[in-house]
Amino acid sequence: MTSSTPPSPPQRSLGSRAAGGAAVTMLGQSAKMVVQFGGIILLARLLTPYDYGLMAMVTAIVGAAEILRDFGLSAAAVQAKHVSREQRDNLFWINSGIGLLLSLVVFASAHLIANFYKEPALVTISQALAVTFLINGMTTQYRAHLSRGLHFGQVALSDVGSQVLGLGAAVAAALLGWGYWALVVQQVVQAIVNFVIAASCARWLPGGYQRSAPMRDFMNFGWNLMAAQLLGYASRNVGQVIIGWRTGPDALGLYNRAFQLLMMPLNQINAPATSVALPVLSQLQDDRERFSAFLLRGQTVMVHLIFALFSFACALAMPLIVLVLGEQWREAVPLFQVLTLGGIFQTAAYATYWVFLARGLMRAQLVYSLVSRVLLIACIFVGSRWGAMGVAIGYSFGLLLTWPLSLIWIGKISDAPVGALFTNAMRAMTAYGIAGGCAYYASITVGGPLWEQLAVGAAAMAAVCLLALAIWPAFRRDVIAIINIRRLLMQAKARR
Image (tube, rainbow, N blue to C red; front, side, top):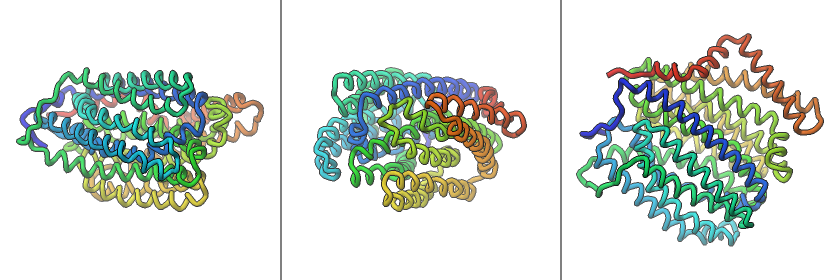
């Protein structure tokens, strides 16, 4: 992808800007996670599993339209070495046009969705959500422009601002007794606020569509990425479609909350990590040593954060969910525990996704996604015979199988350090797995009130982690590297 106007930041400042961007992004995502987690707590106590189940029925199907709306062009714009003003304008109109088309399609398909689930309320829910595809389509390239320029603070402002106002609107609607409509209001308000902030920060107005601007490379990159993302989306959501179709909104609501508790930290860590790693890795792709070093550092941070969080949450899921969400969500506990195991394996494989993107290996990623996601979907279908728990087990088992597959695949098509990627993940998995097991045993041994089980389990896990730091040098080096992440990112500074 070439052009006459390279808007990328000067290479001499790449390391320092990446380091600053990582710090800002982490702060922004921490704030966003607090807002989202607060929203889960508030809305779970104001709404019912039935309300969440209705919303999940719609989003499990029409959520695929969000991937079509992006068409992989946001990543294409960030990954490209150069993007001209004309190409940027064209990308805006392409995404906006796709968003408009999808809004019309979803609006027209509302009755089909309702008939599929045999839930008449889904007609108006689907029609109300249709407008978000147009708004998000208009937002896509504004956010890509900010990410490409390493303006991570403005991206974080857009994320956090939209989350806060969307949650405020949802809570107000729930308090007014609007039920599931509170969740619809939340999505629409978030989309509007996200667009307003991103467009204001980007400070550019798109010109007309320029037919002379070369767009083929963007479209090829986007097409392959979109196809891979659609396969990924299908593998994550086919279980929810099956549960909703077979058992109705109540069971789906429980599974959906368990799944969202899993995906919230994954999305809040993986997405911003990619927004920082992709532009840097893309500019380091011709320097194998620096590329591998940055890749391994990024993976180390990600697996330690998520493995520690999921091990803790899995071990102490009962007191956590019942105390935080309320007694009505107790049945979601075993579902969440099984899903967190899958989340650990998913995170272990995530660094290979960075390699696909940064090296522009989109065709290879599409083929890999076709194989791995078909395998995952097959596991989910087999498990669905046993209801929601069977779906959860099938999902996690499929992710266990695809982790080594991703390493083997990327090792055959690139020079990525797959052995080190595997060792990195196994080290964190072993340490936090043992710590989580000790936390679970301690919590069930002490018995007593739920808050007491939580406190004892947390203390046990902290003690085991401190012991690992003291006696395991490699684990200690990883933790020190995470603490010194800003200095380590500075070492990724590229040369002309």
